[in-house]
Amino acid sequence: QVQLVESGGGSVQAGGSLRLSCAASGYVSRACLGWFRQAPQKEREAVATIYTSTGSTRYADFVKGRFTISQDKTDYTVTLQMNSLKPEDTARYYCAAGAIWECGSWSLAEYTWWGQGTQVTVSS
Image 1 (spheres, one colour):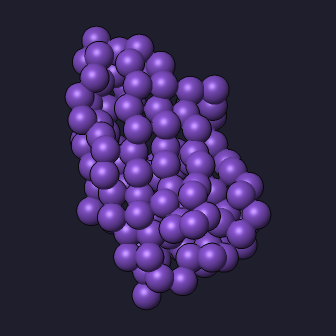
Image 2 (cartoon, one colour; image 1 turned 120 degrees about the vertical axis):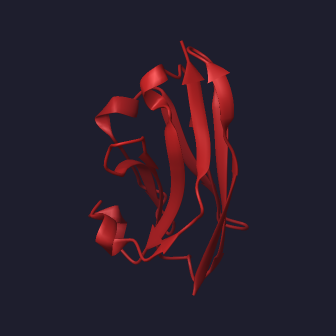
């Protein structure tokens, strides 16, 4: 069993920064942890993932160079640092976990555990 508790988020103007954190507990020493987002009337999409045992990361093209995912292996807290935010980044952001080798899949169905989500709003 894995539990995910998100924190961070909020409102910021375009060009600003926010940091999201996800405290993961349970068996996550070999797991894919990641951030997904869902805007109103849009499908949930992957933003960035990290494989805990190797630290390998993947990013969606629309956040490359702006967002950074990292982990604290002492307690498996995963952080998403979001810089140069744009209004189109406005969404509810969810932390997710799955037993997916090297985060080789971003299929939502393969992510077994999800957090409650945290809102990010970017104004122009």
